[in-house]
Image (tube, rainbow, N blue to C red; front, top):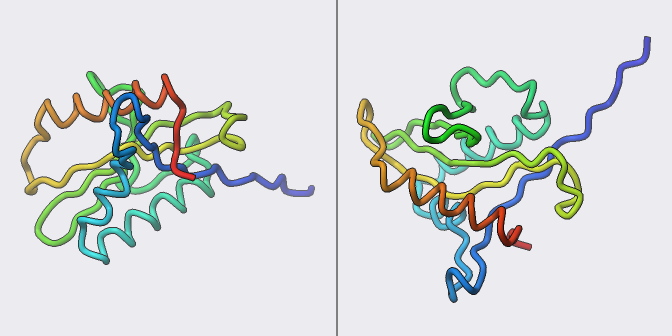
Length: 141
């Protein structure tokens, strides 16, 4: 029986809209640029693996997790390095013809010491970026 080919999902980086941020920042890229090179490379590797799986069937051994409670609907890449836990927060867009097909939208990230909780303001910022993406659908490119 022939195997069915699954196209990888696209990976996009949310870019803030001029009405929300005149600088047009890209929070996920800013976050990745502030990380040690090895940590940023591992995050990119996880994103690539998730995109190829694709996300609904990816089992990533704790490196790709669906979030819960107040962050339900968001996903996170989870990587350790340099003495911290690093999180890149994403949304999934299954039907994103405007983005070229099913897409992972990287919103922003945070780093925190091991065994500490993220601050609620960090989650609020990610939810704000998610709402901005839904409103404007702007990505780097």
